[in-house]
Length: 130
Image (cartoon, rainbow, N blue to C red; front, side):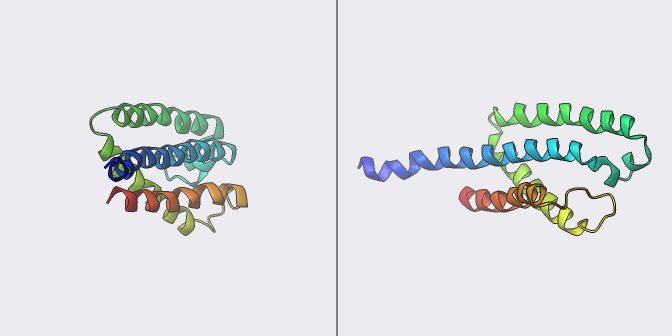
């Protein structure tokens, strides 16, 4: 009987580990995005001076991270899973669509592996949610 329970006990841990790995990749991507001045590809920020755009770009992440972490450690964890998985998939697609953008500095293997890795891992996580 304990053998039947083992997969049930491991799946929630596996779900959380896959999600946390992807969230870590997202944080790594945002660090890489700062290095490559990704704000230059955003409609509102691209016309600002780099020093001001950098501050706005990074400051926006504080409430974003706070909201993600708050809901991740709340009874609404599954909602965070779905919303961020969907975001990571769309995010990877957007990066693919903006691959030729003149201000895209994330065309190297390292940046791409983080970005597209997030999209693939999010798809795997969604499949595990079912």
